[in-house]
Image (cartoon, rainbow, N blue to C red; front, side, top):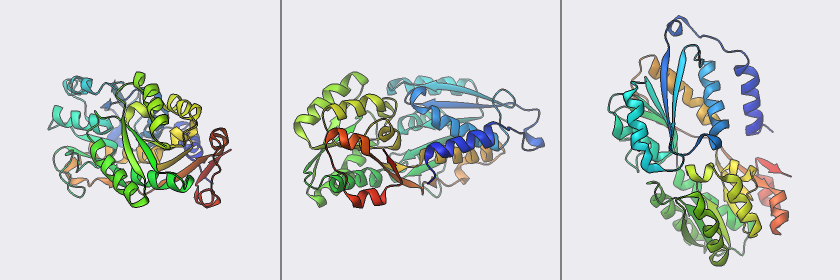
Amino acid sequence: MTTRRAFLDTLAGGLLGAPRIADAQLVGKVYRMGFLGGAGPAGYAALLDSLRAGLQERGYVEGQNLAVEFRWADGHYARLATLAAELVHLKVDVIVTQGTPAALAAKRATKTIPIVMAIVGNPVETGIVASYARPGGNITGSSFFWGEVTAKRVELLKTLQPSLTRVGALQNPENPAMASLLRAMQERGQSLGVHVTPIGVKAVAELEPALDLARSQVDAVTVVDDGIFIANVGLIAELARKRRLPSMGFREYCEAGGLAAYGVDFPYIWHQAAGLIDKILRGARPADLPIEQASRFELVVNLKTAKVIGLTVPPSVLARADQIIE
C-alpha cells in the first residue's frame, strides 16, 4: 500500500535529488512567487515539500530561477490583508494561497497578479471564483467538496461508535467556509440520528477549554481542516485522547494521535498545483484554467489511539481503511 509518507519519500528521492531546468524558456529568468498562508509554516512543511517537488519537476528551482516570498498569518486572519498587500507591492509573478481566508485576502488585494489556490473547499460558495469551469478574473486552483468530506466524517464516527448520538464540530468561526460545513454536517447527522454541535475555536489558547466543553456535552468530535487546527494537530489529538473522546479529522491529525481521518490526499494536490503555476508562468490566464477537483480520498484509522480510549474499531471500518496505524 502506498502511503502519503511513501509518496513524499518517492518525490524527495526522485525529484529533489535531481533538479533540472526543463527548457530554454526557464533559463536566464528568475520568477518570483508569493505564498500567502493563513496558518504557520510548521504545520505545512510536508505540503510545501510536495509543492516544491512539483515545481522542480517542471524546472523551477529555488535559488536558481525561482524566488519565493512567504507570508504567514499564523492563525491571525485579520493580518492577511496586510500580508497580501506586501506581496502585491513586491510585484510577484504569481501568488499561491493556503486556505479560504488567504484566497479571499489575495483576491481583494489584486485583480491583476495571478492567484493559484493550493486547495480550498467550496470556492464558489465562498465567493472566491464565479464557477468551477470558468473561474473568471485572476484566480484558479484546486478544490474539493468540503461539505461532503466533513459530513462523511460524521457518518464514519457513527460507524466507529454505533451508540453515538452527539458530535462536536471543532471549527474556527473566523473562517468564512465554516457555515456551509456546519450545515452539511448537521444535515448528515440528522439523517443518522446524530446531533452536531459547533465548538468554536479562534486561538490556540481556546483549544483546551473547547475540549473540556466537548467532553461534557458530546460523545465524539470532528476536527475541520482549518489552518489553526492543522498547525496544532499534536495538541488537539492529545487533548482528545486524555478525555477519551473519539475524534476524526484529516490525515495529519490521525498521524498525530487522533482516532481516525477521512479526507483529501493533500500532498498529491499540492504537488499537482505546481502544474497550474507552471502554466501561468508560461502565459496562461487563470480565468481560462478550470478549478481542478480533488479525486483521491483516504480513510486512516489509528488503532493505538483506539486502544487508549477504549474503543473497538469495527472490522468493516478496518476493511475499508487505506491505512491502519498500529
